Image 1: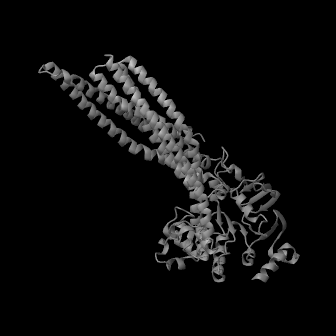
Image 2: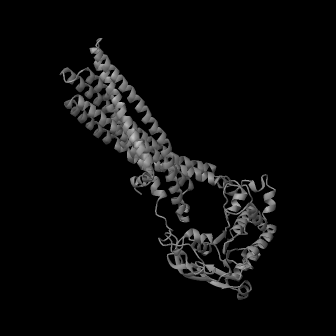
Image 3: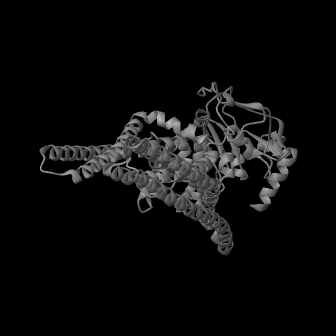
Length: 578
């Protein structure tokens, strides 16, 4: 994504505040030079001082003008700072909102391939880079350009020939500075990329701290992190060392330009082309002029760094989404609750087809169990149904509607998923259960918890329903997390229910009660259950046995046992392991 196009999108939404800031900046630069001009006029008059009232009148006139310019300059400076104080946070909030949308529009594959820490770091880099760009545009471009033009106008007014000399000297200075500073841009982009990688690895080890500890791999992770950190440090050191060289070169050119400008001013005074007021004015303005030119020269390098940082972040965050709604996508209005996988094909990246012309029809209100060993395609089939991934060919219909023709959110609103690995927010239990229906009352939440047999253990917690569950729910046991997830699905009350090893984390006693609650939950719904536990499979109307992306057997539990096929072998294996 083009950085300038990205920024312009938000400038159009804040054009009034941006216009006020621009006008205030221009006025501030003009009043600064006008103050210097007024002071120079006073100094030029002082040697002529006599008791003559006309001379005194001139001095008073310029003093009044100087006072007015100072007050005006202070006023416009306040307007700029006050408006910018409102503008920048609001401007960045608009960007943050769109980044949030862009990130969450990505498919599951994006989050599987990118570390959460890296995504967070690049998001931070975009916003901080935008702030740096704003600062560079204000202090490295707009103010210096207005200051240079105003200064040159005053110098030209004092002496045209001197004005041309000063202009040429500073044009050469700008060209040299740009050549010096522009070389740092590529280094800044590398530094931003390595910094984001470091942040990503660091946060990844925090997120999986229990895994690090359980496998006693602290020293391995430390070495890995140090190795990546070392690369990032070297990149930043290289950038800063280059920056130091560029600064030295720039400062040398700065001093030479200032010296030559002052020599030109004194030479024109020597020739009688400048009076005392002109000398005072030009020498007073000259240091500021060369400083402004320096700011423009430094703008190229500093802007390149911020630009590279923003571009690097935008490249990731706004990369093309692999699962998108079509332009004419509509809300899902189901005609029944049937699910149909019609001749679908799908393969994971860099792998051969998992499904090839796969067909499965699930009738409205039917409860179907998917059985098979790991890698047979059970979980992938569910992910295709909820559009975590899109099929390569064929179609999936829900309630008679092709899921590619409806909005993803409206599809998922009709499906409740109880996963094997339950994910909870680091929020209260009340909030986690209410996530199934954000408009539910406390009473409805508690009722759902009771149906999931979670109410009793929740009330025994120190803060009851207001107890926080920790990162990913680590303060609860596996069975407790699962019951919270079931309560959440009960509250959602979607017409389609997916159970992905939903009782796998429960002990036998908990499973007994959960099975009772699931019977109530499944009533009147279309159910797809992935399960190894025989107690769950027996509740299904039909069992579909899968192997390597194909259906190898299907039928009722008792029927499949009589056939002594794949399901019978699976059943026998499970019975032996009980």
